[in-house]
Length: 121
Image (cartoon, rainbow, N blue to C red):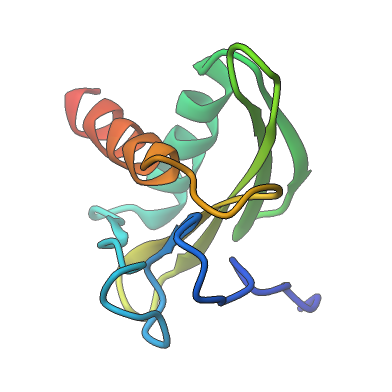
């Protein structure tokens, strides 16, 4: 197995969310549920992300996904990372801004949007 980088760099800045256990309450977001067939759910995550505007996959394996998302107006880059954890029955997510102190809630809304799209499909 290849080494998987952390989903986010934990800081006190309010510009990211993460579902992993070592995340503060402020930055925490629930992981995505895997469903009965984790590999299929993870493939659906990839499909849904590719359908989002201004989104490009930077790295993809069977258990890890790193996506670059750009904002509409200024094209600021944000990183969205997903990690399939079959043992826990979830897909951990981390979404973070590369620049700036505060993200105005963009990263939380992005993960929530992905969650809604998965539930609808």
